[in-house]
Image 1 (spheres, one colour):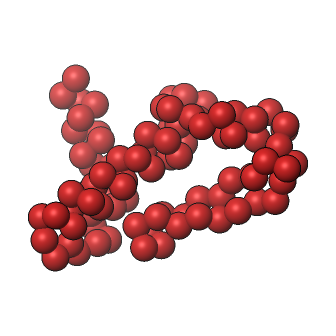
Image 2: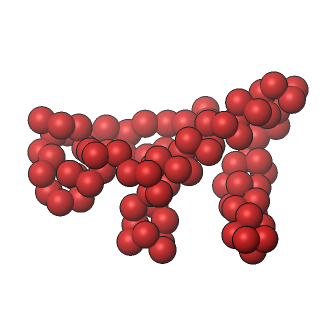
Image 3: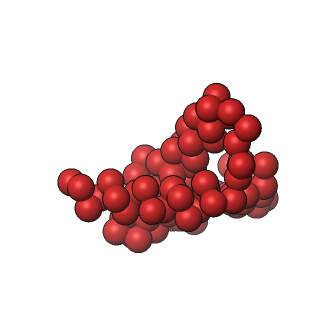
Length: 89
């Protein structure tokens, strides 16, 4: 289990914490909380075939070609993370 948490800490540090400078502990907690939501719901994981651990049903539908709506870009952590998804038509 230790190897998994060490890998997660490395990912958190390299993808998030090296790029932001929180002014307080409260802001740091908010940033880490927002990153965790991104990590669990949106970030593709190689071991899961490019799906996030808790995929939204629209992600699965888009992957299967069932969604035909326009592509939307969303930003998290003040633009540090950008991801695109297809809206339901």
